[in-house]
Amino acid sequence: MAPPVCTCPSPESHARRTVVLTGGPGAGKTAVLEVIRRQLCRHTVVLPESAGIVYQGGFPRRPSEHARRAAQLAIFHVQVQLERMALGEGSPALVLCDRGVLDGLAYWPGDEASFFAEAGITREAALARYDAVIHLRTPGGDGGYNHQNPLRTETPAEAAAIDARLVDAWRGHPRREEVASTADFMDKLHTTLALLRRELPACCRPVRAPAAPR
Image (cartoon, rainbow, N blue to C red):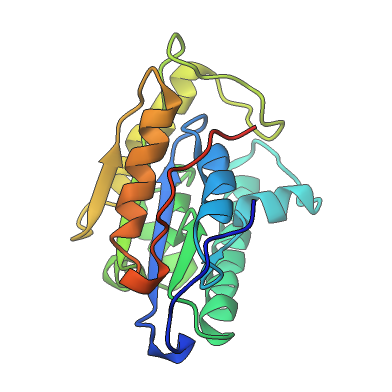
């Protein structure tokens, strides 16, 4: 299915917005993003997850504290450059990030101060990178959590703990929304799409209802 036709008089007229879609393992981000790519117009740029780029590219995934720090810093810098590229090319109305720079705090083995020191950024500067944050909550072990994603290694309890740490990581953002886990995933999808529509100019908003991901 082709994306909806955009009625923008000129792409340069867009006030660009950057939005983070975050959530713990199994929250449904992959399925939501699959639908978003089909539903939103060509002026929406959906960035790939930087952790996937890093790990699928062969970066070692080891349990030591030193290795975990190295991995999260690599993911941080890939994320920064993905955002820079998206904002520097063309005239997107919306840059949608599959996680943002503060997600690394949920996986960081040290304290918060050491994360900001090693990443070379402050909390305030990190929050200011994004116009809105949408957090998809992770379901419990009896509510749909699974290991369909081969990069997902966490147990349900570990996934819930990461989800809670993500809530804390993004604390203080003035436009942070949570989307609760629901028995019917379509409810979660519709809620997320409605939140994203609010971030788009009127000319770029989809008019048809989202189809279920295959």
